[in-house]
Image (cartoon, rainbow, N blue to C red; front, side, top):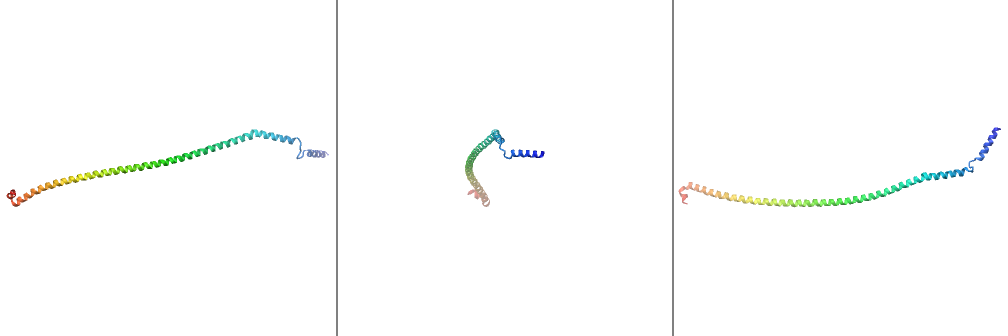
Length: 163
């Protein structure tokens, strides 16, 4: 019998505390859940959301600054390339001008050397002509002297002196 009493008591408790017993605990649990949600929102979610928003803003501003820097760098690179091309053209023009001047100076030097060589050739030719004339004059006198000696030997000394 004692067993029957305990079984009846268990059945009584089971009927009252069923699966969906709507008493004061359900609203109390709902209020606890809302309070916990408000506390978590105030202490965790809002600071976390602010940190995420701040990080997004930081990334966005850094991205914009990076794009601005990139565009400036590209503009500078293009400007430097243009200046480099201009400098190369100027350098090529200077080199061409220097080559032209060097060729002009070389041509002038060659012309001066040829003119000097011509003057020296003419001078040498005139000296040779003078020496030739002197040699011919000297040979003429020697030929005359030898001719007299030959005539003297052949004809005798008396006949040559009469002439």
